[in-house]
Image: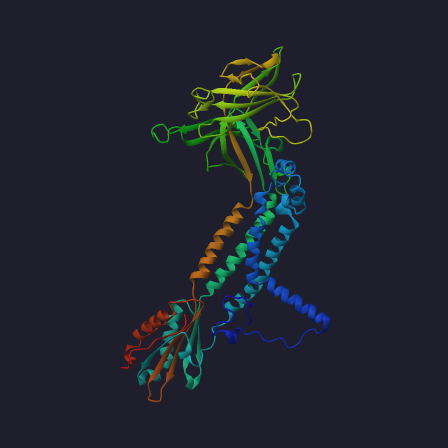
Length: 560
């Protein structure tokens, strides 16, 4: 019975007779034969475990550019920005498909080659292992003393007449220890029992590789049905699980909008607990809790809490808490008092005390578009330089400062713009900086005038916001299952020894009976000699009446 060329046991001394593959004696000749031979050689290389491991490493390396360069599938705005900032390098990277790494030709080729390689490795191993499980242990070698571990026991002439019983006892011991056994009778050359165990080792090896193949299939196919979305929600606001509700949405290649489970979620309140007793950690957050209400399509509601590392699970989606901050209510009115802008604007935290940066864009309602860059200080303190800072993340003395700009905000030019940034190069600054006009300063409930009589700005309530990541990934359970099987299979393949044991009873010219004990390992097995001696000791306990007075048994420990 042949083994794959890179099988764990291929070529082991003591196994080659049963494992030798007959040499090919005939085959195609001429140019066609050379082509067929070349293809066979390439297939053998591709389906070797060495190449499979190399492809796995190559796949990991090929995935690195996906984390270094923005991807069209997950960050289209980042790709647009990259082309703007790197006009010479970006086209080169685009031709190399660096902005679509995981869908590129070269990444897909590596992925498919790895898949084919693993399948080609696994199928012959399964076939061989199945045959090995159905094949009885091999016949007893003629010279057991040449094996890795060897011991002897001499019995009296009475035992020689009952050698069948002696070997039967040895067979019973080996059966009890989990060996597959077979009796071998070679007449005057001795009666013996041949035993083998450790098939679980190759089973673990197969489980390891099949589970690895399972991960590749799960990620490659199941990942196409996954999707991920982000949404910032202010206290009191509600969002619906729909494409138009999300700030960003990253679909898998097989995604369809019908996959979205209909439901809504309202952020009722966002609670943070701050450290107040430890003087070395005053103001450090100790707990985050987003208290939400989930609304089913039929109007049924359920209250729940989303915490860090404790997502809300609804049907087939998980809602994770990513971050939080303040979203001051800002109202802009024109010179006539008409409201031209009113919204809760999320300000992004810049430090541990939640000094936050935000942008207000007023595209309509005034003579020209208006942009404002603001800093929000939850607990404002004035520094010696005249600048402000926050000394605590909670709302103790909130202050909002605004630098005001006027001009074309670039909203209507067709290029995606971030709501959290303002490009000021083409704008005219009206307040703050070097304009000679101080930045606008507002506390809750205050209203200040815009420069030049352009209207007013009012700071209202200051609720908190929470940013959520909504994730649907059907591969989680298959990948987890395969990962557990990989670890289990690897442990079994590494820890379970593969052994062959023999016990042979040979009648001697003086009428006594020589019992030989030998073992042979497959791979590293430092306990082989110990196992042989333990078998001898256990066997001899049942043969006390037959024992002669020979010298102590000698053990020959070969390479283990």
